[in-house]
Length: 388
Image: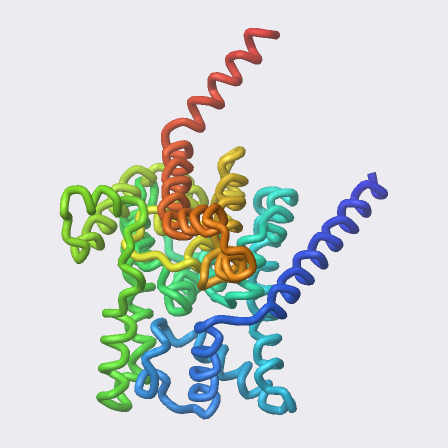
């Protein structure tokens, strides 16, 4: 028994070492527009100036700009500050992925933790793209550890609200989750109000120290955070919108209605399940997706019993990220090396429809989780009882 446990620990350490190595290997292949923004924000924040007043290239709450400023100041002591800054950034995001993996191992399953840490999409987004959605996901998963449905508000509830607030202040991908909490069936009314309203209020208050300093900062917060629009591509429903002539400016309304529907459908589920479905639905139904968002639901689809669907999603997104121009851009390199029509046309189809296919895979996972998984499990149990 002891020997077996030691072997499991050894294998886990080896998998962790492999995952870390692959992330830093991807780092050596270059970087994109986002890291250039990190350099700008890091320099401003590291000099204790107002990021929201000086650049439009930061669209989030204050937590990550503080991290950027700290890492930038540490890297300034190096002769090659840019490389050091990149290494520190990848190290921070890798530790975040490792934190998520540890929660998965402790709360769910060690094999699922290994799958998460070694999945190529997370490796790519952390190592090459350096996006930080995973920090917000980690804080959200930590918050769930303190959730409780007792009527009295205590220390655990404060910690739940604290970590959910940190998640939203880092990157507001959990902006709609308070609605899910508000509609929860088993949560006492006092907890509903505390859980649902305090994190958004803290998020808004976090901008005050910056907004009060200058009108430029206030305008920057309004225009670059609250009015910021990513690619307005609505991948799940875009082909329907095109056929019926639906105005794309209203696609965010459809997204909101679909998230309200998800909140209603998951109101009786366990809080873990509700958060996981939220992370998947957020990307599946989103009115605006960029390539880094495809990493947001990974922990969720790996934790949930999604069977082969999680591998289909990871395989397809991996190909997409490696071919896409905002990723490694291998399609362009293949076209330069061998401009055959087959290579170019096949690659173009993957790139042009990549977000759509990804969103529909996630949508199928949602349908499976909400409507079919329990039914299939019951049918399997009945078959087993019949055999016995």
